[in-house]
Image (cartoon, rainbow over all chains, first blue to last red; front, top):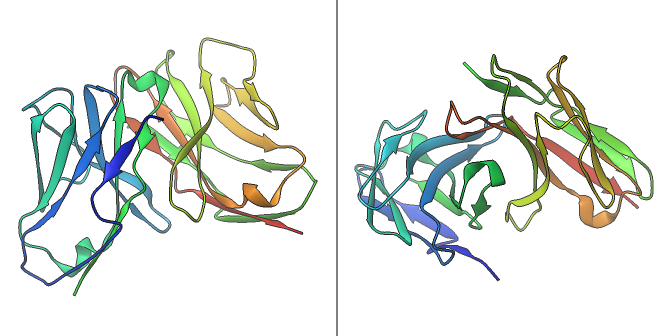
Length: 112
Length: 114
C-alpha cells in the first residue's frame, strides 16, 4: 500500500521556535507538496518540489522554507513560529499531477 | 488567475438518499483536469473521482459520479445511496499543465444522517 507519512500527528510549539515538519513517501514520486488547511479557505499551497534539491514557492510561502535532500523526503521549516501559523499541514506527492496527489494524514500544529 | 469555488460550506443528507455537491472554476485554458477529494474525520485525503476536460463523458466511480459542464465551468459531484461513511469534508480541485499545481476549493462538509 503506497504511503505518504508525516512524522507528527499533533504538535505544540512556542512562538519564535524553529519547527520542522517531516514528510516521507515510498512511491518514488518526483513531485512533493506542502499545503496548509484552514477552515473556509480550503488547502493553500506553501511550497513544492519537482526534484531533489529543487523547490518552488507556492501561494503562501512567507514564513516558511523547505528542504529536499533526498527524493523520498520533503521537509517544511517554520523559521520562527508565529501564532498565525497554527494550522493543519498536509504533505502530498505525485507521479504526474494530472493523476492527482497522494496525501499524508496531516500534522495539526498549534503555536502558543 | 485560476480559482475554484465551492459555494456550499455545509450539507446534510439522509442515509440512502442522493446528494449533489457543487463546484465551479475559472480558467482560460482548454486542457485541464478536475478532481474531487474526500477528507473523513481521520483527516486522510482520498481521491474520489477524476475528470479530464477533453473527455465529454462524465466520470463515474461506483456510487460517485460527476456532472461536468465545460462551457459553464461547473463540476458537481453526485453521491447516490449515501452511506454513513460518506460523512466527510469534500474538496473540489483543478489542475492544468500551465498552472502546474492543484488548486483547491474551500470545501463542503457533508453529514450523512441515519
